[in-house]
Amino acid sequence: MADIRLLERTLASNVAWNKARINFVAKFLVALIQVRSVNLSEVASVFAGGACKASHYKRIQRFLRSFEVPYAGVAAFVLKLLGVPRPWALTLDRTDWYLGKTPLNILVLGVIYKGAAFPLLWAVLPKKGCSSTAERIALLDEFGRQFGFASVAYLCADREFIGKDWFRYLRRKGVACRLRVRANTQVTNARGRVVAARQLFRHCRVGRQEVLGGARVIRGERWYVTGLRLPKGEYVIVVAERETGAALSDYARRWEVETLFGCLKTRGFCLEATHVTDPERLKKLLALVALAFCWAHVTGEWLSAHKPLPIKKHGRKAVSLFRHGLDHLRRILCNQLCEAERVAFRRVIKLLSCT
Image 1 (cartoon, rainbow, N blue to C red):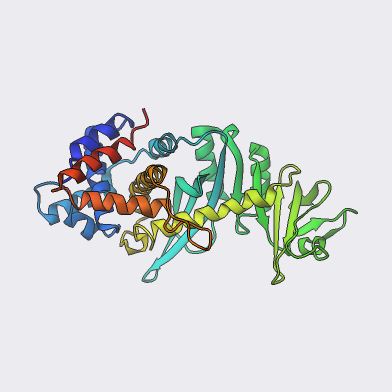
Image 2: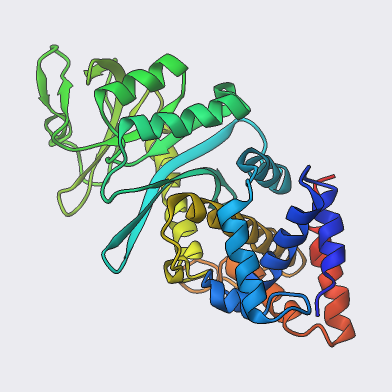
């Protein structure tokens, strides 16, 4: 059995939570990593303590129903744990799936760092489909109150995240952006005439980016536009608040949030296996999963620093840092009868220390 008390002391030295909450979080993290699933029944089956599975299951339900999760504290802990230097590159995206006929739809604001996106703030949307401008603004406002927009290098977002009011909000708050727009978005050309954005890049050589000279009006705001025509005829058109030749390369980092979603789902904690559908309870569950994800990733970084991961012929690592760390944590937690694994457990707990 893992020494939960050691994990509790480490968490207590880094987050200002009460003792009962820290005890629960420590036990939940250990159980979640062991079973690698957010299915509460499976988590309860390996939950630390002398109580029966049914009692552990009720305790988990009670936490999701009644405990107040300090989301601001979770976000601050993630940033301290990773040591992300300011200013931060952020990404905004959405993941969704269905439990039967019930849509589960999550809007996530994450920080991009070392090839991955780490969740900072999120909102569970009680509907299917795209987020509204009001929902995006609420999430960004929460970030602004907590960290200030001066800490943002730029915000990446895909074609879903457009709109006149959204653009006006970002400009008013002074948030630097790398936003992809649709190919048929109405943009002014060099003569001030409104045309579809793709018309400005149809003569470009395939695979070669072009930065349009001067600001162009889109949805009532002035943006600098960079575009690229792909071999299959599709266009990647990105707008930024200032002229820069790095708009496309900055925007390309948005893909790291897709890696995050994969790790939270099938490649990691099987988020789609949850039967939690209440938005507030699902939001609390995501806070616990976010902590487990970050712990696995920093463990993978630590392991890779001591023994670099092999590189395959396609140029990518044989396994991701997250999966490397998650497998290492699981092996340790599932073999605590071995003295060597108990020593290893104490080592990986130190990785959670931000002091």
